[in-house]
Image (cartoon, rainbow over all chains, first blue to last red; front, side, top):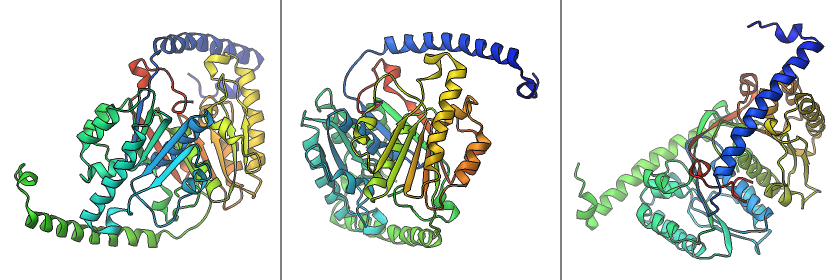
Length: 213
Length: 213
């Protein structure tokens, strides 16, 4: 192999490269098409975004927007409440007919410093979530930062999984937050571990509106 | 340690656990507050979501919604065009005054099988992106699947980075797609590697509206 290949390329090389590209892409298309043909089940899925990287909640809100775009109704329960309303809250509250938005938690645990109160708030939030999980008119439910409430044992994971399993068959559920418990990962269809490569915060950059909040 | 602790717990144990929780959270709050105080830079950031896991594009669209919620204007360029309009496209096109939405690519490379055409489409898409990167009235720019165009050398990474560096200082840019090139990772502020733990598609479940599209 020669590192100078691209610099030495001429018309003929380009034609050869393009032909090889096409042959490779024809083979790839066969593989992809076969996989798509094999995946024919249609049902509601449970998606988990977890890990320490940035993008867990924003990914959940992206899926809410996708669902709304397809004319579905969406429900959102946020298990951790920040000091100020977030951009996603301010935006999605403009569409109360199609997006049922609840901010139920009471700040991060190190802000409240009161376990009994955190447990009571998490239980109240779960009651709202459970109402959504019984409502077939809601196509997608986002349970933002639920993993944190489970990790801290504010809610019982087995009870949560039982409620998820009893939901309408076509309903999608997206669950975000660090530290998804293994039983919940087992119960989910799609799970992504968001791994931080680097974060602006570590370089002294404040949380930015539109990006982190 | 005794596994029966919780079952044997009584009021006194609960009080002890709550007090320990509080002490731990007081210490944690000090650490978190100190970090927040140290991070005071305010400027536009470059965020990259990459890797093979689900959630890259949806995370970008979540940030678009955050920006819109804060009253910012957003620009979107999608470098890969699917067969049908996605939910996010259908939803965000309802707000043309605040969200400038462009779907520029021509399908995945294995669908087009024509490299010269893919390069021309990518270059045209970059021209639109560059216009956004020169417009200080746009608070957040989402360059969806740009990484793929770079990985396939449809666009020159150094030229892309030069245009990103020349953007208005408060503008945020979110770049998604597998295989972010190392030079782009180096130029970014926040980078997340989305690692698949499992995916519904592998279990024979079709791509679902509201979740994958």
